[in-house]
Amino acid sequence: MVRFFLKPSTFDLVGQQVLIRQWLNGFHSGATLGPTNYILKMLVIYAPFQWLPGSARAKLVAMTLLINIVTFILIVLLLEKLLKQFFPKIKKGFYLSCLWVSLIAGSMYWIQFSNSRNLEVVGGLLFIYLAFKYIKRSSVILFVSIVALLSLLMFADPLQLYMSVIPMLLFGFILYLHERHDRRKLINWATLVSAVIIGFFGSRLLTLVVKRIWNVNFIAVTTHTNGLSLTSIIVHGIVPAIKQIARLYVGGYEYGRYVEAINLLFVIGILVIGLGYILKKLLPIKFVYFVLSFWLLDIGFFIVSGQALQNQTSRYLIMTIPIFVLLLAAVVSIKTKLRPLLLLGIVVVIGVNAIALTKTLAENWNGSFSKDNHIYSVISYMGNHSYKFAYSSMDSALPTDYFSNGKVTILPLTCTGTSLSTSSLFFDKAFFDKTANSVSSVVPLILDGNQIANNPSVCSLQNIQTQFGNWQASDKLSDGSVVLLYKASQLTTALSIKP
Image 1 (cartoon, rainbow, N blue to C red):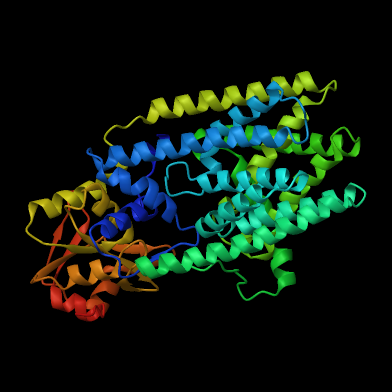
Image 2 (image 1 turned 120 degrees about the horizontal axis):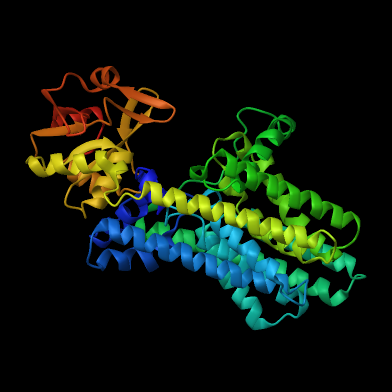
């Protein structure tokens, strides 16, 4: 709720919900989705919520809370099962660790979003647990279950291949080497690899089926070399990767720098103590292999892919979080002289975060969601005029379409360099073209303030005039944002929209 009150709604927040509404209305002639596509959520969660009565805002908040609460519960249950693979008894330190994670989830997940990689983390943990069971004792039912799970998981979130699947396969092979070359475990591991391969092709098949049914395209999972060699990417990526990891574990930025510093010092302290326990052989060696397999590979893929050199990509390290929870639970459960201090420390950190969260929520409670005043002004403007539709930025168009329950239609434009173009990201092309070509003489081009921006690109009034020509008239929204009134044909021609 803090995020809903403090952050304006962006196209990422409601994009899939807008697209599922278009699908339900019969438009499925082409749209673009990210590699983590959330289509399963669209069909199972967003579509049913679309049919429910009530305001769009209430439904968005409800589905976001539902998804994140279910995510947290399932993560705790699965982590409990994973911890039992190494420690026979679950101690209170584990539940304190989970509570701490719940309080700093703002920096770990896109907690405001139902369109975030949250249930996919649950899927990754479920695979890890099933793989544990399979390596110990294989069965046909378990094999089929793993194939089915991976087909869905790697379809929904292809990055789980690197974040969960490959690290678990590495750990399984290390386990075979550690246990005196147990032939049965090697056979189980090899058939697990075959299940992964079949699951991968199953996910590709699902992708083809979805492309065929809804004519969607998926943004490919790519590396970001920035023109650098692999060696340069690694050298230049180490420091940014450390910063991104820190960003992941500091907690919500709303808490303030002091609380962020406390969380970061806590994490660093646990890592240092954990390393000391490893050197003293106080932690089971299998558990050490498990933690290192995930942390080293996830961070390694993150650096080598070039993602560490991109801004705000810490979410690609999301699977390190549940592994850290297991490490934290293990460290605070070891009976040493430090244990009472560690338990006291985690309680204090939990208390600091709980107070910070409560204070932030109380100070920023905002039932009017005033951060979305621009969106409300767009809805009000369109309701007070007879225009059938308008053009605007993606961050205005998609939230307006969503929060107006489809009563207001704004077609999304994206700024690239200094020119505007149509966008099909979370927006069906057939719906766009049909709306743009509907009978209309004058169409508003609604700006965000006096420009349309797509960081780092900015399309100013001058850029718009250069691209589209002179407007017939201008107006303003209630929040002061500029509205340019153009001939409809003038915009469709300049934007190369097919009739």
